[in-house]
Image (tube, rainbow, N blue to C red):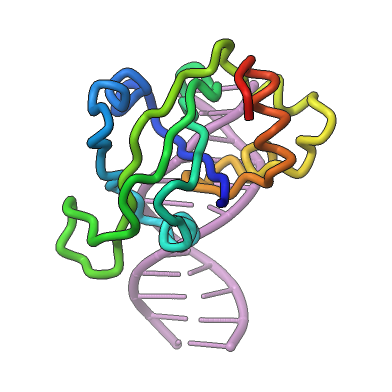
Length: 139
DNA sequence: GCCAACGTTGGC
DNA sequence: GCCAACGTTGGC
């Protein structure tokens, strides 16, 4: 079981949109970055991820689960790009902001803090646990 | 709105 | 294969 973090601009696709898709989930299309794509290719069904609102909010708002492994991205004909499907699992009781993460001991190496531009990124088990506790939910 | 960081493209 | 130019992301 691995942990991840998905960034999205809430104006375009936010947590509420994701929740509305229910257990069927939604294709995480539109990623055009090799590192992010490779991270998705490494995902397995059942892996968990944080759902992060970039630009507006700049906070982790919920937990998602990978519900379909990497398949061709339907938003392009370019065969280089594929993506997973994710479904909402539960919201955090308290959103965890980027600012919170920057000052939280144990999160110094979190990709979210150090690489602002990577939209799909790995989260270590230790980081997962810390952020869950900050968010008021069980890891 | 600005700009830093980073990724990609294409000329050489 | 290097690197300058350009484009994009996303925090501020």
